[in-house]
Image: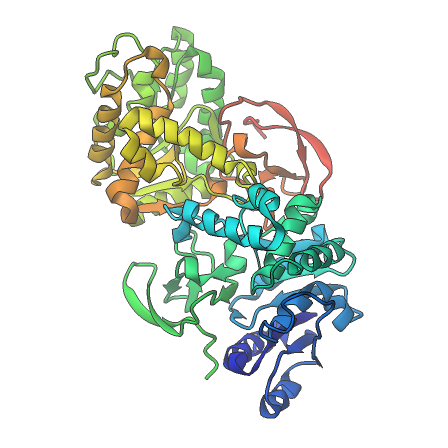
Length: 283
Length: 290
């Protein structure tokens, strides 16, 4: 099952996510789940035609900031509990509302990785990331602060230099041990701090320091291309977004991390500037 | 486009470089490639074997003047001769260097190096890969080491700028003749060699640091950054073995076959690897004729 979710302001983006799946031959018959984080009745009516199951998640346990944070974080914090919201599937593939499938090979690789090891996920390490070329130490310092806020100084010291595993597109096998450890780590973290990154930090802590590293398949960046670390290139022959460097593998999942770009200037393979839409162009 | 593939060795690296040369010649594309060899101190018997295998053998001479020139190991004439390959082997459009401790498993790696050089000038592999063990907790320690290397060669200011940049591995690269990289690399190497005050500081890393400095200072946009499988540096993590395709592959999906296997640091032979199904298997990391 592929699951996504959104509230009303993200509806335009999540329409792209869903259409990008349903427009592919492999995605037409796939089971689609949706976490309703505050959509309007009209939006829900549209969704009813496109997805199989719609669920409204709830807080799973009490934590100090529960009444002060946006309710859409119910969806973020629900991710370690997807099999409870959508029971009966072998593999759960989560994709954020600000991401869309350009090439099904990424979905296939995520599913294969989950079958092989339990969890398939993309670590934010790539030669095409602008961050790699001089920005890493600064990013690590920010990462340190995030871990410190959620889990304290000791965990921050352990994990600040580890590549961030991006939970925007992941696949987890039903029987993987990650679910419970992730949920436990998240519950611990939320007692100290609740942010939009809490569930991602919790999964990173679970994988790196709770014995799950070998049960985690680290996929290439083209399986979840995080645009805030560098734009892809445009291949005019194949009419698709590709990695900025050779062999210019088509981007599987385009993830509009941070800024929700629309039309932007990118370079073609021949290094010519070209304006393209980074969103799914179904309109 | 005329291309020359160059390697080099002294007598002690001869058995390794035999693997390099054989791995090239055993491929259909490599059988007809022009091969150059930098003789860094091979025996007459070894040279006789090489003459049968390669097209041109050159004995490099020092191209730079520095205080400790007569005291550093002679093989460094070859390593530090990399920025001067067009002088040793004039007349080619593209130069592809491969270290003696590296060998070609899959020609797609070579193709990508050549395509990258054609596209941008230099094609090289930055040591940034999800399959590298150092990425998972060891990178800060390595950065501190890199800081000391850069500081010794270029001073504190350059070290502070470059210590966190991914190391561009000069064990395998392709560089077009008519690019600014050659001159800037040579200048950068010359500057580092002027700082040498002790033979113990003379290192095979010096020319690598010099190219890194040149690229990250002014040649970044003229450099194609290739994936880890094009030049797999085994000291950062072993590949896996694919029993169906009978080849070494990336440790993670999609298990792309390694183009060049690079025995960085340890010159492993038989080692314990995992198959793509996670089963232990003993395999050689060196070139074996199939």
